[in-house]
Amino acid sequence: MQYAAGGDVSSLVAPPYDVLSAEAKAGLLERDGRNIVAVDLPHTPAKELGPAEAYDGAAALLESWLGDGTMARRETPAMFAYRQTFELNGETHERCGKMCTVETVPLGKRDGGGILPHEETFAGPKEDRLALMKATRAQLSPIFGMHPDEDGSATALVREVMASRDCDQWADIAETDGSVVRHEVWAVEDSATIERYAAAVAGEDMVIADGLHRYNSAVDYLESLGDVAADHPARRTMFVLVSMSDPGLVIGPTHRVLGGMADYSPQAFEEASGGYLQIDPVVNDPRQIEAEMAKVEARGERDVFGIIDFATGLCWTATTVDLDPLRDEFEDKSEPWRGLDVAVIQHLIVDQICVPELNGGNPVTWAFPHSVAEAIEIGKGKETGAGGGGEGYAQLGIIVRPVPLDVVREVCLAGELMPQKATFFYPKLGTGFFVNPLA
Image (cartoon, rainbow, N blue to C red; front, side, top):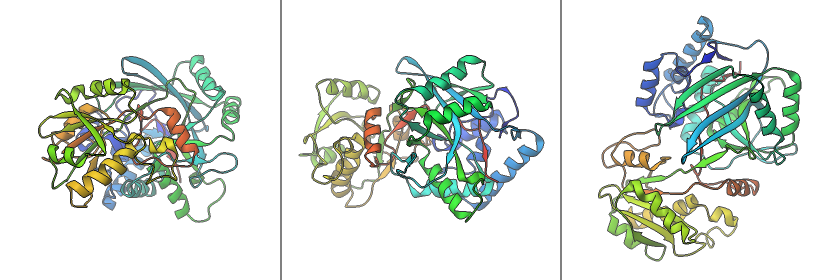
C-alpha cells in the first residue's frame, strides 16, 4: 500500500528510522502529522525495545490512515522502479533499483540464490523492529539489497522503465548531513516487464546492504506465525534491489566515536598505541582530517585512520605498524576481511588498546556517525541519531575511508560478516513510498 496522494509526497515520507533523532522526528511531524515517521519510529532512540503502548499506538495510527484515505491498498499487484538522485563529493549520481518482494528465508547460501548478510548486527534494534512488525502487521520500509547482475540486464531494464514515462510519485528528502536527495517512483504493473525483471535476477544471491535488523525481524515474524499457507504475505519481504553494476551504487564511510574510557587522555592513547600504530600529528582542525588522510593514503599506506581528541581538538593520522595486524588472531579470515579498516578498529584499536589499557578491561561506548561533521556534533554532546549524547560522552573520534564495493563483494561471497556498521550505502532509501501489509 501507499500514500493515496500522487505526485509530490515530500511532506509524508522520511529517512529511515535508524538515522533519525527525536528532534528530527519532531521536525518531520511538525511539517505534516501524517508523515510515516509517526508509525515507523514510535519511540526514540530505536536502539532497543520500547514500551508496548508505543507499538500499539503506531498500529492504531496506521489503521486510521487506511480508514480515512491517507493511505490505500493497491488493487493491482505491482513492482516499482525507484531512482535516487544525489550529489557526493561534487558529482551527481543516479542510483536505480526495483522495489519488489523476495522470499523470506533464513540467511545463507542456497540453491537458486540466497539472502546474504554483509555485517554483524545488534540485538536491541531487532527486538524493536520485530515488536513494531507484530503490532502493525506490516513491513514499513524496504530492505536495501544488492545483486551481482554481471551482464547489467536488470539495471538496464529498470532504467528503461524510467525513460519510458514520467514518475508517479517523487519527494525531496533531507539527509542527516543537510543534503537533499530526490526520490522518484514508477509503478510497474504489466506482467511482461515484471517477468523480464524476475528472469534477470533469477538464481542470484541478494546481499543485504542496509536493513539486516529488519530482515532478521521479518524471518522471526514468519517463524512466530507457525505453519502458515504458502501464499501468506509474511512469506515474502519487501526489498529495493540494486544491481552491483548500477553506476549510481556508492558506499560512504561509517566512522567511530568512542567514549566511557576511565583512563583515557590523548597522551595515554598515544603511549598505549606504541608498537601497534604509527601516529603523526596534523593540522588541529577536524574538518581537515580527511584531506590529511588522503595525503597519507597517497604514499601507499594500507590502513589509514584519522584520530580526533574531542576535548582538545588535537588531530592525528594513524597507520598500522604491521601490514596485516589481524593475521595471527584471525588466520581463518580472508585477507580482504582482515584489511577492513573497521575490523582493525574493533579488534586492534579497541580490543587491544582502548579496553585493556585505557578502561581497565571494561567495554567502551560507541557511536557511528557517517560524516566528520556528525562526529563533531557528537563530540559536542549532541544526539544525532548515530549514537552519543550527553556532555563528555565522546572522547576519541576515529575517521575511516569507505569500504570499496569489490571488497564488500569478496567478503560476502566468502561467507564472512563485516563488523557492525562497516558500511554506509549513501543515500538511505526513503521510508513511506511503499508499505507491505502482512495481514
